Length: 232
Image (cartoon, rainbow, N blue to C red; front, side, top):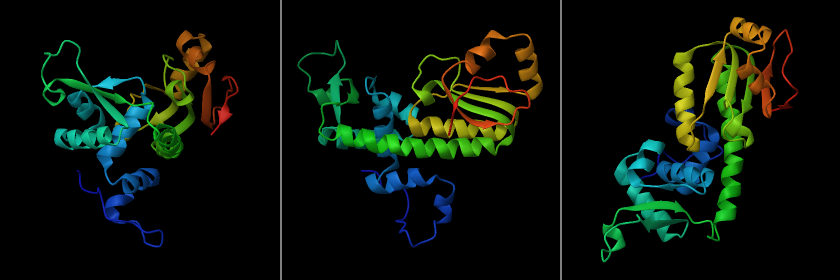
């Protein structure tokens, strides 16, 4: 089993420097489950309840060592939270442990509803921490969450930003968030000038974003064009 990611933090203690760069919900879950790898695996499975994954695929998606992933998968299978299924076409007669297998969430587990509720609450906190960091990455005039953030798959984008953003700061934030939630984040950044031009020519892509379901986090545009959205 993977070792605890960091030292215990009691409510009456200051956060150690090593933990200061990580969000509070992430630290709490790691402490609760005792393993960063287990938390990331659970979050990926719970966010993709119909998905099936091979070990190396999971290793790549959550950015963890393959041995740590194998150990935590064994733990989750033992607890009945995840099931291992032999790949179709694997040689018959072999024990499951020797066959190539993939893993999927066991939605029939008694723990599934409670885990899902817990991680949904944690994701809300992660998203708030994420958008706060994005808003501080530059001069942001408009920031909206759409697509995966509002339960709409296949939309034009998930994160829409108008402003001047430092991409060297933005990209690591998005990569880290993708690993935390186990889901790719499609994002669009426009300068105020590009936004104005696309608006003036009735750009189809821009309007598809503005007319979609979304949560508006920042709206300091001088020319209000977007359809009303919920505030975060």
